[in-house]
Length: 81
Length: 276
Length: 131
Image 1 (cartoon, helix red, strand yellow):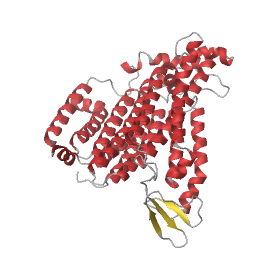
Image 2: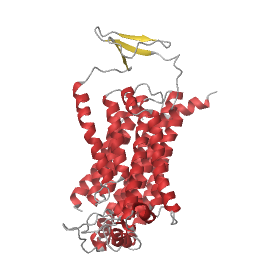
Image 3: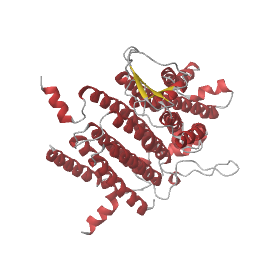
Image 4: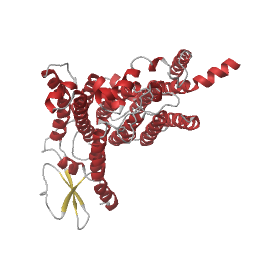
């Protein structure tokens, strides 16, 4: 649709994806992954896929982030990688 | 290892980029993806099923088999999580933490000793207890009914607006999860215990498969909803619309139960005694 | 130079989707932590879904919900007015499968941590190797 907004959101998505894989704190990685899911949802809403954006907003930025935080809470939080 | 992985990724990316040179221009109305089956869906969905939301109509009616197996996949994921993690502790070896309310002292009782449930001075706490937070608890208590009503609206209005069974089911599950986070896991288990989640998830799958069997009993194909016209007393087009609604309700129930099961088992690592 | 620029402008968004997929694949292969591998798997899955959704877009077309007038009558349905609903349907199933595999993968991670008390792959392999 409006290619300027799409370009900005694509750049943010790539920065968030690289960031979620690089930080050393697993809780930060889970939160960055939640933000990545939300930006993907916005991208799909711009492209006109409203059902898919609704699903990704509820699943990715909602339940998936909570499950990640629960798993990080039950295991260790730091990593050297 | 990292250099080999980087080389492989660059080569694979190069091959894919070379393949993408043949793709149609972005947004072309005559691209091959838009020319074969989807014009039929766009033109005929409303007169076949009386459902304006094309995605719901295709998902639950024209491609109903895929959605049934998707429901079975999510049910299998919930069951897999239960089989992997769930441990039943014998009550004799568990130790509990209690807190004396007037003075704030925490005591730990081993080997099956416990105080009565309604004791006025001793309350049972988790190992990472925080004090009673008024804002979080009041906000959650006020907002959870509205979340559930919105989820039911999303399921029921999936014919005319974006939404449907799966989205509404996830939001219902999220309402139960936020209750469990704000209060205790044990308080949430009093509202919806383990037996209820298992029964609800199987009930959802049964509703979906059962509608197909009912359609077959009336003489038509499996999951051909126009067979329900005799059951409801409407013409076949409206019967397909009602069949889509029933199937979406089944998917919503199954998805809600599986989301709650996943949270219970992951947050307590299978033991179901304390949560996040 | 000119044809290269034409190709670049028209196909650049496909290249960004492929770049995102490669980030996810690199994360799965290279990272030693289990949770980072799972995050890489999910990045790969959502990038593939993004690629499929972009195939269904059309210019000057609206969302795939048939509009109707105020008196309930349907206006004429032209195919070029609505975007393609078929990739959306397939990708809804893909998102459901992604969250299902995420749940089982995180259950496996918690189980591994209960047995070996670490989540780094090289440490786990050393613990398995020594007698």
